[in-house]
Length: 238
Ligand code: PGA
Image 1 (spheres, rainbow, N blue to C red):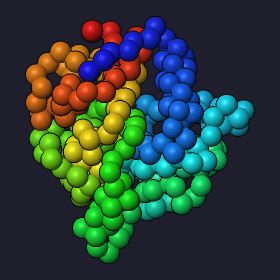
Image 2 (image 1 turned 180 degrees about the horizontal axis):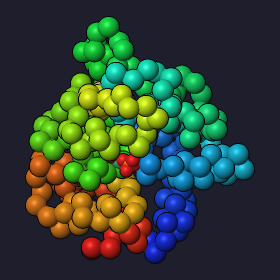
Image 3 (image 1 turned 60 degrees about the vertical axis):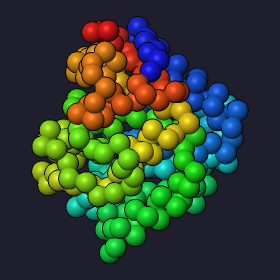
């Protein structure tokens, strides 16, 4: 796992976007898996600007949502689908049929997950991930199997409480659908993004602590092409 550390949050955003533009230019049909959450908000805003300025294009790319909350409506602004749409997808030239999301309202969840796996096919070229303060990746909570693929999961209590920052109502989701740790570990390139001092402890544990399913992010130390990209706050204990 390579560590990239930046002195300020703007520098962290610009560097990630610069690398991302580079990957898209090198591989226009880049197959990406993207997270929602607070971490990538400014990154998505700069990428949307970059597309508006014709510096880069998503016209041949594919975007897969990393996960989705169960029990919230598909148009809830706190859902992964809506966050990705509002922050990125609606502002770039990605074709509608190249935006893939998980539907937790599907009548057959196993089928929904199997169809997602079929669409993912031979894996992602690039995966962007946030990191939970408990080390979760997507909704792969501590203890998730290394061989896991897209599936329904129960959320840990800390994740449920943390999700309150995405929802304006108090009906917090207790489960979700997520791509699995196998999908993460099979991705050709993985960037774990972390900003802010509240991520400093988990970043330190991920980079320096034990490699264990108890901290899913630490498993990425076994990945040949993984970067953890931190700002000064998130990297303050390294
Ligand atoms: P955040 O979420 O980007 O909102 O901090 C990250 C996560 O919990 O995976």
